[in-house]
Amino acid sequence: MPNENDIPYHRHQSNKLKKLAQVFPIICLIGPRQAGKTTLAKLTFPDYTYISLEDLDNRHYAETDPRAFLAQYDEKIIIDEVQNAPSLFSYIQTKIDARDNPGQYILTGSAHLTLLEKLTQSLAGRAALMKLLPLSISELTAAHQLKSTYIEQLLTGFYPRLYKSQIYPSDWYPNYIQTYLEKDVRNITNIQNLIQFKRFIGLCAGRHGQLLDISQLANDCGIARQTVNEWLSILEASFIIYLLPPFYKNFSKRLIKSPKLYFYDSGLVCSLLKIEQAEQLNNHYLRGAIFEGFVITEFIKYRYNQGLEPHLYFWREKNKHEIDCIIDTANRLIAVEVKSGETINDEFFKGLLYWQALTDAKPEDSFLVYAGNQKQKRSCGQVISWDALDDVWQTI
Image (cartoon, rainbow, N blue to C red):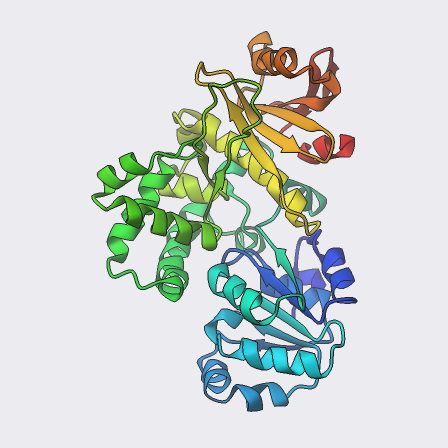
């Protein structure tokens, strides 16, 4: 059991997990490998028995005799990497139906296609699903671990192990990708050519922050369009990438309808692009897209940490007018423009001003996030620095 003093950060999701465990018999915590799921589960529920199905003996026992495996424990169990023994879910359902007490099982998993399928089939209505991504800016700030510059922060990324063990990103990420290919990808589907799949990931990295073009990806990788769709689903299922959907409300009939492709972690996409030094990132043609993806991912983390879906979009007309991020709330649309420059200039506000003229949006619903460190309230919107992104949510 880890000691809290050994962990340099407190995860915001912990309080939500405790509340859910008071009303649901099962909590299922999913997210990318090495996001901190195990540590969070152990620290949030310190009196629970912990079992890892990464352990081959435990896995064999759970697969071959699931009834006896579960019978060892009364309640309050953390089962880690539960997707490794999918037959357990039906037996867990039986135990829950027999004694419907809250907080009986905490289940964690890295690849969520299997988990979601089993939750739908066996545990619907019995389980609360939470998604944990790597550390957020606010979590790093609270732990005094935030890097001094945004370039250094983007290059390092947000996986906890990098901070706990002080590992260089260039040493850690290539091994992370290899582990991901050998474990998560093989668990999700039967891909024969992992070398080609790894090349596909690299091609996706080169399109970070760009509109998704299935045909072009298929041509560049030498695979069928159907295979591209299948492989994108795998990357989404294991929380490597997400596809940001376009906002469809018909303010204009000439809207872009393709999603944008982003990687969840800036350090991972930098590694895939072979960016190892701050100077390389500072001069890279995708620096703006990497910064943009970082901001949008932070918004996703904020919502996931509250157990909520993000409801994030982008908006673009075919004449190139664009808003990088639209936050769709119950009664407001929040427009967020993202600029990687550290000095504010009037050009930064052009997209917001066009949006306001088109939609009659109020300036208080418009934000500019930039790479500098000032917070300003302007007549056309609010300016937010890269390290204070939670301020956007304080107005919603």
